[in-house]
Image 1 (cartoon, rainbow, N blue to C red):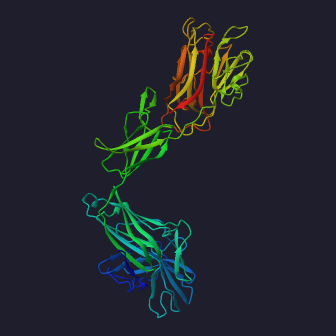
Image 2: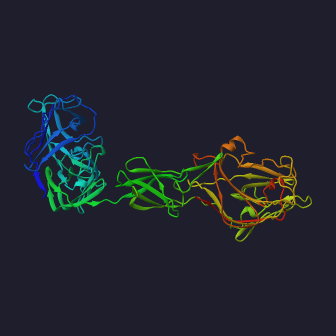
Image 3: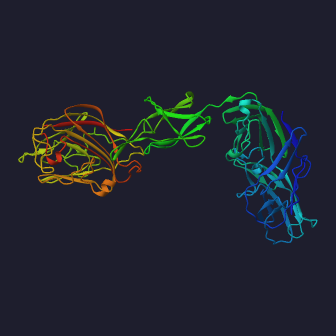
Length: 619
């Protein structure tokens, strides 16, 4: 049963205000005094006042708390006054600029409109103490022609406060042994179809009443206890300021660390302003709260995330894995509710590779489970991560790479030129690269395809390696492509490498597919033709790159191919940079295919063919 106590009297405070000097109980008809000396305008923390309820005697008592703040309205001044428990006075500053005064006060003080008291649906409470941050009080008008700070009788001014809302004082207990010691996290008060909270409780000084604002109206209030002072379920008190009104299906939900209870309070109730209603409930029926886990702070480039858990026992562990894999990984606990997921890296000389069984990667689905010892106590799914970036298609026959004009290629380019126009062509569904022999001079013309540009002169061609590409914040771990190759033995050679043919005539040739993640301010230029090649580079050794390009080489992968079909060929990426942010704005990707490994030196087999389709990133 809800018990109501009507506060027909007023809460009295004295401005050189006379206040309660003890915490003795008072009946609703008694005043609520406190004193203040006038030395105005102090800026101190928001108000908190204590209220205690004695259910057996049917009364409640109150006192001002240290640093409680109110707003004094004195003529056209709106001033903050702060309670000093040593003197039992509210203290502040006022401009003495009138011979007659009109005083009234509002509690609590707010830095916004003084007549708009915060009254939201999310509230806090320090242990079992009442929090009057949400308790709107208004004093009666006092007119005085006496010196500032004095009432009409010439004595220190006394202001009488009236509570404009109702208070529900709820006490919950339990004797269930395994629950009594759990900390109560929050209590939610609910009603049907009627707002009991809003952004503010707005006071009308012309009618001495108040009402909810129209913004953020809610038919429930969740009171959360400060983490450092949560009461136990053995005895928890909750105080709710709500507007006067008629309410249906008044009920509460109590949430402890691992359990919850739903309790009906009243089917209907009418509450009046200034009235305090109290109820005590002993809870015997509790339900276990479901353990939940969700990902936050997901970073698909660093492949890390935080896991926020709900209702997880303090001694539990949290594990995760890709849904398509079998090995569970253990997340690192960083707080009572949070865990961290991050990848392990395998060192490979001067490069590293992420272990994709660990960490969080784009386009992958993840499962989780919580355990205590060997026992699984909860499990679920994190779902599928966001998609990564798409590599531009090759299936458009109108792409410049299939023509002899690649000076300004948007993404894909080739070495097609006026003397060798069939080095790269489209034969659905493949991009076909064919080696050949240059007319008149007879040297090798390797088939090729690359992300970059190509500039041709009569004696040489220059490839500008690199295109701008957005990785969408997701780090790939490999490049995948469908391809097939027909590769013969070396039958053409022209330029020397380190004083000799790169591959000897008659030796098996190799096709090559190369991929690099880079952060370069300019494309890397490689020229080849009648003269010895320049700008030849190798990302595996970083040979041929400038210091700036070496610094901007984030990762590379390479595959050397012989004759055969390669379905879903994966080319692993080897990372020089593990912590560098995803490249943006500069030239960021190199993908290069050639029918001969040493095509830049015009060394290879003139009948080689390489077909590719469907480039995509692997995560």
